[in-house]
Length: 404
Picture 1 (cartoon, rainbow, N blue to C red):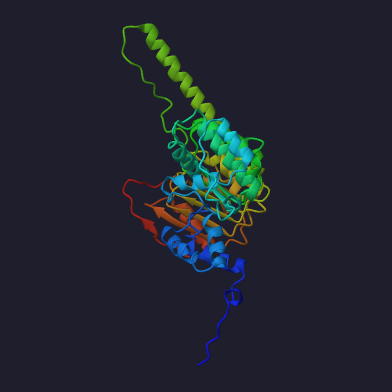
Picture 2 (picture 1 turned 180 degrees about the vertical axis):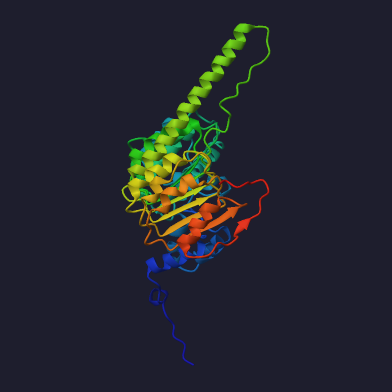
């Protein structure tokens, strides 16, 4: 049998774009579960092995790996930040050195232009990674985290251009507007102006400044996910006073509590208005996915009438509709193809009444999985829409009474 000796340069190879598409399918988790997703942790190991096959495979694998660099699986992300900082130009390095931030040595020179690959950014994970890196500095300078964040975000914008997707999460009470408002700064905001996929995982009230700006910054969102929007969980009607013989102290404490309540109420109103403005600002919203939300539902749903031509998919998961008004905005979305309700509660006939007379000619099926008995009228409407008889497709929950 004759053996052909083929030089490496003559070996057949897949087109790089095709190879990258295959690698993407290997590492991406089920994208139906979330509009913003991470790579499958176990599958990443296979991709690392692919990077060792040859130069073409290595290049394609690296592009995929660094497309979503920040995630919950990177052990703090310290090495990621070091690699990115090695790619800074002379001027950027000088800027950080003037702030007395000790940078890693330029060598070894990175094999790839890693900042050029990023397409998807989890801002919270990036912030945690930068904080982890700054914590290792011999002398941590004031605002070192802000300085490094600015340099890296500019690096991404200049090398990769605008992001495709962005995730913004609740960062906790220790994080303030200054750490998220960086995204709104003139030199950086171009990074998020073309975002097509936006995930907002709740916002703390000390971060609501960016939320107010988002409608003006992000107008090209096609896939919007809202998760964990609870509003203020503290009962605003309760006040705590400490028994004291000093009447003046008691009055001052009550005044302070009332002022805090007023501030919180104003912030809640600002959040509701900003979410409504964000939806109304979009040029062509295709999908809305709401998960574990309890607040601002009326503002959000009422704004959907501005997306009636483009909106195709709406999914509610673990949503509490208590005190939500009629779904008039949803009823205008006649081009819906998917409408889903998973483990939601608080639905009343008054809410879905606008849907009864609405027409959805392209709607394949209304999907629902219900806790407890739920609203019988709503189930009847769903079965009428689906052309099926009533089925008991419930999860028993003795603590959840009928919302009808």
